[in-house]
Image (cartoon, rainbow, N blue to C red; front, side):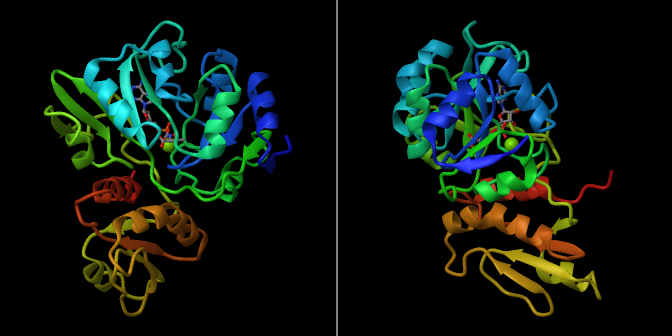
Amino acid sequence: MNTEQGTDISKAAALLTADELVAIPTETVYGLAGNALHEAAVCKIYAAKNRPAFNPLILHISGIDQLSKYAMVDPISALLAAQFMPGPLTLLLPKKNIVPDITTAGSNKVAIRVPKHPLCLELLHSIDFPLAAPSANISGYISPTTAAHVVAGLNGRIPYILDGGTAAVGLESTICEVLHQKIIVHRTGGISADELQQVSSLEVVLANNQKTVETAGQLKSHYAPNTPLYRGDISDLIACNPGKNIACISFQKTYEGVENFVLSPSGNLAEAANLLFATLRMVDAGNFDLICTELFPNKGIGPAINDRLGRAQFLHK
Ligand code: TXA
Ligand code: MG
């Protein structure tokens, strides 16, 4: 299959209407989209990215007025939606029957978001169905923040990439759920826990994400480069690996004797988040023996950066 790239919304809409797949830009990362209500299209998504069938997909809708078509919306979730949608927040809600089981991998809950990207919103307004869209990478690899990243993983597997430029946030959406009078954060992301906390008096808690897929976005090894990645005190990691060709991905500092990739010399976490995945891909394409990185400050989007780097670490199988 020939993979084309462009900004033709009617072409994207026509392909999606015919149950074909299209990679779409969002403000977080690129998504691999198909009609969320058609099993045939959803099957193609799992196949194209080698995604395990037990890992459910997020529904992308054109606006919060569409939420109640696909899910039961409690009052606090409605408040969160009003505050943060469109934007990098995904709500986990009890699903309605119109959403096929394959889209939620058999779960009776559905994850829904309204992406904040003009091309993507225009596309969603031009079709009359929601889009199921996981990140547009081969399962387990680093999420794409440009059309070129999508090509690198999915070229020849999908007919069209809607090119919306570089993703503004660069990390995936925050996934949360209102449960037992708490706001549970299943995956940290573009909206911080502090921002969620400002919307209601309910306690915001981070889910214990060591567990399983039961908790969204939490496969243990994920976002992983092929080059071994270690996290810790970078100076110590360098000292422990003499003679190795090392790439350091740091927040602000540079180190001697290695290739430095500083994500934000001025100490801006949003800038660091925005560059993280592109930098990981670039480093992975270089000839490094290993990647050294560190813990980022634990505020704002910092926990989401730390979560992704934690999952990108080299695991001895
Ligand atoms: O920013 C994002 O959320 C991007 C863009 C494309 O929208 N999408 C994204 O999708 O990151 P994906 O599939 O790569 O990650 C979504 C995570 C998965 O880990 C999945 O397990 C979880 O959301 N998820 C989706 N539906 C769920 C459900 N019904 N119950 C529990 N977890 C769910
Ligand atoms: Mg993903």
